[in-house]
Length: 221
Length: 221
Image (cartoon, rainbow over all chains, first blue to last red; front, side, top):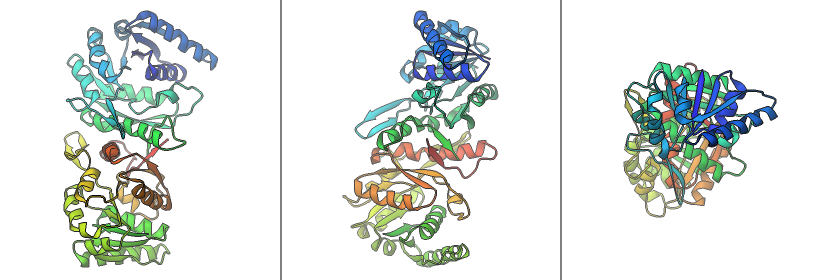
């Protein structure tokens, strides 16, 4: 498969690019609004991979160019940029699966909490911004970006996947299965996305409150 | 400590009673609206414990009687009975920590989802029903009752604890630490309860959707 990481210059994009490039044979393209930023990030990821003994190409393109050739398009942008970003590639999504890893959160005195949009979840916001009929999945919400991007770190994390249809679920399941240390889990339809997304502020609160815990993910057992 | 399990005849009450009685030296009293139901459950738990080589007494009382002598009062009732149950023991809560393990959920075609009350979380609902100044904690939300009540089963689960104050957090942390296979984690103040409670419908959805997974708990790592 060909995977496009929109906004792939950010921290979750970096981790997914490095892990996909190292652990799978899928082609990875980093997208950005600014093609030079995308190219620079892709080069930097290639250098990191080389330093880990992996010689593989990572491409850099504008977001629409990255989406055009992709079978799977992951919107690696903050929740408040998600609608804009998906709309900017809407003409290129035919035949592709759109994946949303973003989570809406807000901070108050006690900690971080889940802050879903009116449609119920950020994944459903992504689905609403995509052309009708686009297969949509929500995944990768609960991965600590710092550990994901550290190729020396082991993961041991579960990835609950919500999806609008089997094609979306199957494509994302394949990608997750091939990344070392991740286990894909079926979390049902898009209507179940909020409970998956809500785990992320909990992970951050737990890491903040408990000495010795940081960069947390989750395992269901 | 003396632990009262209000509504301790139900499934989460059974699991907590058995594990506390087997793994700790704390006194356990099963409460119920109906004292005969409480006594019968306590006897049945004692038989289960005996069958597992543990000779220990479990008491059965009405909910208010159970609460009267308790240092820790766990409201093991469904969310929609929580306010009534806490109000029924309000006169007996002085000097005790109140613990809420309940989660509000609703089911639709796609699965179960988190259904918090207007105050934000079920734990906060419990706090609102208790006399002012009662130390309140939320804990035990994410434990699969069936596995908890099976003394032959190993757990390996984390228990995120939210609390109104240190006294509540410390008491519950001690109980959790002493139960084999549970790890207490500080999840912050009561305002962080929703994200802990929301994990429960996710656990049930994952168990339903994924072959081979059932009676799930969670581990943060």
